[in-house]
Image 1 (cartoon, rainbow, N blue to C red):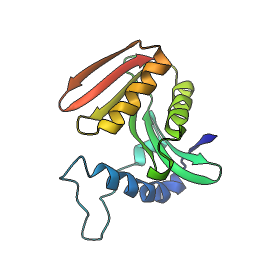
Image 2: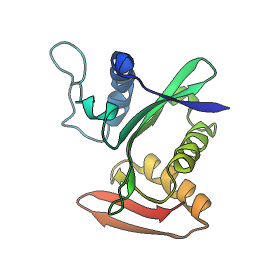
Image 3: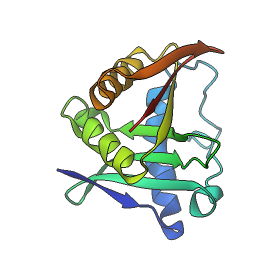
Image 4: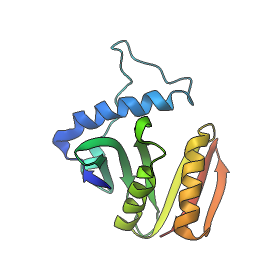
Length: 154
């Protein structure tokens, strides 16, 4: 059973380290993504995940970190969104991503929006299958600017 651990500001470096694996995996879909001269992918700004409407979570299996999720909670006029979501390769295909995403949906009920870049077919298959399941196939999907977007309520 997986659980979500809310990332604390003092754990930001750990999140950045874990994100290196995510960027590595994602780089096969975005050829412009390159390592910096220091041998690492560029860090993204995470400060807003400790304030405002943003949350960062480590996905853990027991004591082991197996992924992360970055979420933006919607307001009355906007949807909750999955900003980034990652399960380490050796844990993919075991249902941990499904379980983690369902926990996020339960934590923040309401309207959701999930986006995948067009080239990332595994992510699109994962999210479409999960969203079909949790919504009984009641969702909207559209294609925009090279990405697929699913909108739904849970």
